[in-house]
Length: 378
Image (cartoon, helix red, strand yellow):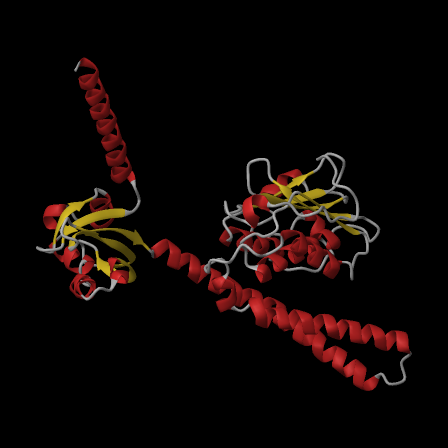
């Protein structure tokens, strides 16, 4: 009997400790959690975040409860008709703060069934959407600016090349070939603007859940192949990458293109550039873009991803200061990070880190290393 009492006491202490942890989480969470009775349609629980963010307590939240439970009658009716999909709901709406101003929110809730199989309780959370919508607005504004920044000079170049082709019938074949090469590059850039640099396209990056079927090694090879039209000495080294990752391929191709463009612009024509892909020490995967140029001034490294920032080495080099900012924006929406550092032997290394889902590539099934040279130890 003594052992049984000790076990019960231990179980009680564990339960009390868990309750304290859950209460601490609820008290300090940025989300508003709530619970309501399906029969009376009244709130029975409201987390402290409701008072911090909206000025309501459980006793003063009558109008809030009406908004939270606005869809409950229809869901209960659907549940009674056998529609199991009504148990979980996610919707966006506006909730009034206690002082009267409206706040855009996302409400997620679930019907909890009682012993008789009928909905007895509804539990949910409220998420403030102001920061998310502000970010979306900034992304749209940035994409509009970016599209204009590129499209204006490209249109000028496009018109000039067309005039040269029309009036240059007497030019030699090598010159006409250069015209066609310029026209092809301009057409590609304009198509890229239409495909995924429109405000709507940029804003959509990272929003939709992508399948784990984008081959990371192939992403690097494609980026390198494109860049070799401007710099022959671009090598790709991969080791132990999963067969598939979840990402927006158009966005990541653009990210690599911007990093490679930066490396090409700020190094001499005979300087090699390396693309490296491997498993990151902290989990996930990492992509490295390395050059062997003069590097970036140490005082400027913290600012290289800022919008419109151009370093002291940009004097006389065409650009808008948007490429690295755009690369970081794309990595951000993928839940990753991008950093820059000067490597000791000379040059600059940009590192992209991306998370990898647990099921990606069937437990990180390895692909054969595909590289122009073996992967170095660094």
